[in-house]
Image (cartoon, rainbow over all chains, first blue to last red; front, side, top):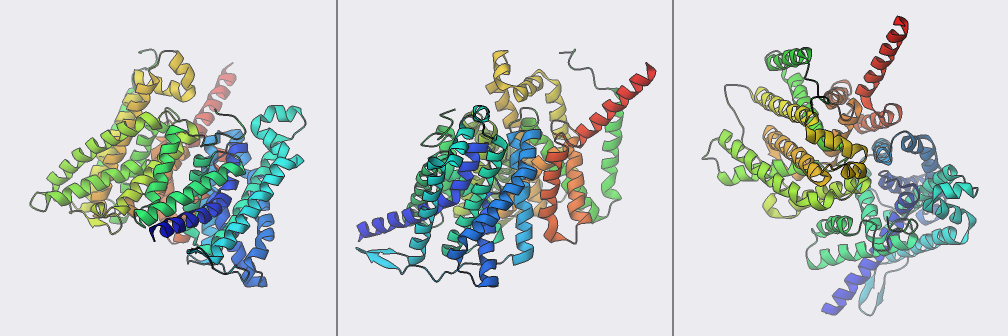
Length: 294
Length: 329
């Protein structure tokens, strides 16, 4: 009995972790390539979820089918925001000021979301969810399993782009040494904008996945931003693998602590882990994927 | 150090004295609503100056000062609850203040070691996480009563109304913040801190004990913020985790400092005055748009005037002087 419970908790943690990984990978890319901590990350996620909601209401589109549209729309918004605001702030001030800019963006977008959709809690429902199934006494929830599969597929896609395509090589090169990449003909400014856009797109897509298993409201963005930050600090900056590792760890920490210590404790443990990691090894377990350990 | 610090001019002393005098008369002429605004401006403007002790001088931007704010409010509030209603409120407030200061001192010294080793964004986020941890802890354990909240006794003294009384307390704290800021800036310590802000490695190489200096600034800033928290808690009369452990308090302190001009003593005050009046008076009826406005001002300031209003004034002043110099030549 106890072993089944432990197994169940571990499986739940893995599934949750896979979703955390997807939700954090965009944050991780922006941090790794641009050095910017994107405090608007959570609001991009929510933006994606609400866009899915709107598409479903307007066109009757299934949330899973809406993922490509959401990805493109949020990407474009992200790229425009980077082009107009974020890059200006980084050039004029310091990386520090990008924290303020992205926080300002999150405040504005949150207000817009409230004005359009209201402050209530919503959720997304898809007809394509897997059925809940049992594996040797462990219950796997259908919605969560679907979300996990979608997450892994998107993460795989990103890895493919980063490690097998020319664009990905330009992104990695810029992250390593933007000056040297420039000498080789890479336009660092464009790569930054591209990275910001793609990352925002992944955040938006993860919003749909999250919306299918979790109800959401416009006030959740800080939670998701912090979650992404913890994931990145646990795993390592700038790579899908780091995000996956961090996300899985975070998922396990949160399910194990809520199962065995108490349902109110996960947040304390999550932030405790963040604080500890920042002090012990701020670049994550895998270190910085591109820059080497600084 | 005389070469660095010419004595404060008589005119500045006189102006400060006049302003203080005006501030002392204010509670007897203003309507309660306006007085409450003035309260907030003094409290949060003062705390923004306290934040600048670290953020303004050394460029270590704390995104989690609400940790100390909440720590102060909770420790004083819980202590007053333990002492019980037999003791007078003023006494409990005083004991609570001492308790909160000691507790914050211990907490700040304890986390300063590891946290101050981090730089830039990592420091900012570590402080954010620290604030979140304290907020979550206060909500999680029943002992702290953070979820449901708890009342604080009502302070009354000298026959003043509550609004007036707390106005004076906040004014006192504001003056203390200003005094600490000015003394620090004019001391050897302050110059060292400014050097750390410009280039920490060079500062260390030049023989500035960077670790010790940063620690002092961090602890001072934390303690002043905690005192603000104690007074704020008593002025609210009822506190919960949601009302004192708030990310937006941390961020507002930064916003006020940025708006006015980071590293100046009057900047944070003007920043607080402008934002509070803007959001509460001019947009008082449009509560839904508060966040949007704060966000817009934040973005506009970062892009258009990264040195703040004081920076803009300084620039205009320099331009006028150069123009005058040219005219003379």
